[in-house]
Length: 72
Image (cartoon, rainbow, N blue to C red; front, side):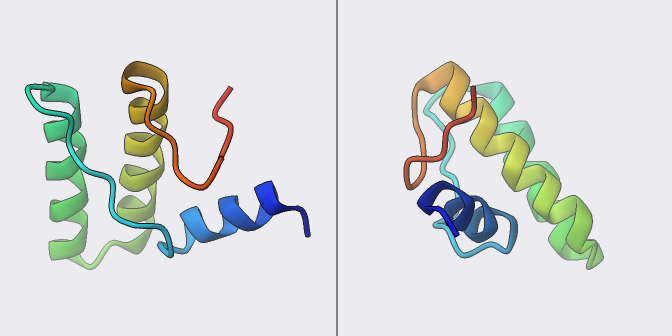
C-alpha cells in the first residue's frame, strides 16, 4: 500500500486528527456543525462525509493538508 493510499484510508476511518476551523471561516463552521450533528445522530456515513469534505475545503481554500494527502 502506498503512503498516499494509507493516508486516505486513515482519513476515511477517522485516524487523522480532527480538522480545525480556520478563524473567521463560515464554511469551516458549517462543516464542523454538520460533523457534530452526524455524531449526535449516530450517522457514521455523514460523519465521514463531513470530515472528508471539510479537509478538502481546508486544503483548497486554506492550504492545510493532512499527512500529505493530495486533494487535486
